[in-house]
Amino acid sequence: MDYKVLKFDNQDGIGIITLNRPEALNALNSTFFAEMDKMLDAIAKDISVKIVVITGEGKAFAAGADIAEMSQMNEQQGYDFSQVGQNVFNKIENFKLPVIAAVNGFSLGGGCELAMSCDIRIASTKAKFGQPEVNLGLIPGYAGTQRLARLCGAGNALYLILSAEMIDATEALRIGLVQRVYEPEILMEKVLEFAKNIISKGNIAVQTSKKVIRQGLANNFECGSKLESENFGKLFGTKETTEGISAFLEKRKPNW
Ligand code: CO8
Image 1 (cartoon, helix red, strand yellow):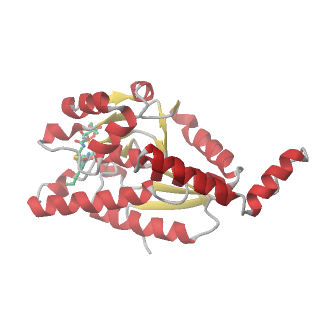
Image 2 (cartoon, helix red, strand yellow):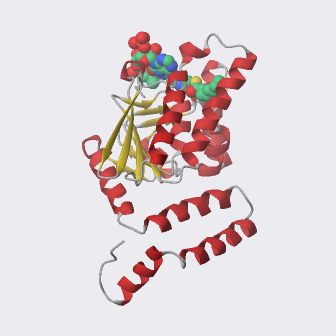
């Protein structure tokens, strides 16, 4: 497939998806959602990709849903556009591989919601975050009301969504919206180093950890803990776990 607003690069097993419509600050339009959906399917089939990084070209990660496209919408179309976005972001959240957001710049509205659907957010000191929808007489529509409240607590979600305030990376780090912050010049280097470190671990264990955390959060503590035990047990049936434990006891590096 020919991609118009996305780029893909496989760097030694790290699949890098770059939002590539910098002239519109990578605003999320229907083309973006169709292409992201297809690209995720293609990555899922490519066994050489072990982890995914999402970033943006230019000064934005993504400055939100495409306001020009939304300007023509009626109630039904607004609902449908919200559903399309939620489905794609759910696909990222439940993707079998870990997904890291390398937040290079503006991450606003739908752009912040995209970052929140990723597993881990690593930001540049130039990044800015916010849910400015109320400035437009809107609310977040790609599950931002739900993810922000779960990631940063109801108080922080209400503070940001009701005020439309834009915060910098330091503040985003303080409220737990991002996990690390680096200078822009070294952002990708640090993200790739981090991704490489994850790839060097037991891949099945890494993917199982993500699955159990994600499915556990969608259920109650008891269900989540049971899921953990089931998956913990299953790992003892894999060559990966046998090799990992043997390598430790034999004081050598695992040969996955
Ligand atoms: N949509 C469409 N175009 C955009 C968007 C956007 N969200 N953001 C920026 N652009 C365009 C601008 O129109 C401009 O285009 P042009 O050069 O043709 O005039 C170009 O990108 C560059 O932008 P600016 O000149 O504004 O750049 P600045 O550096 O001056 O400002 C800002 C950067 C502060 C990020 C500013 O562009 C801005 O405020 N953007 C809008 C941010 C925003 O409100 N985002 C939230 C959108 S609503 C949303 O995301 C809802 C999600 C849920 C949807 C549910 C489905 C219905």
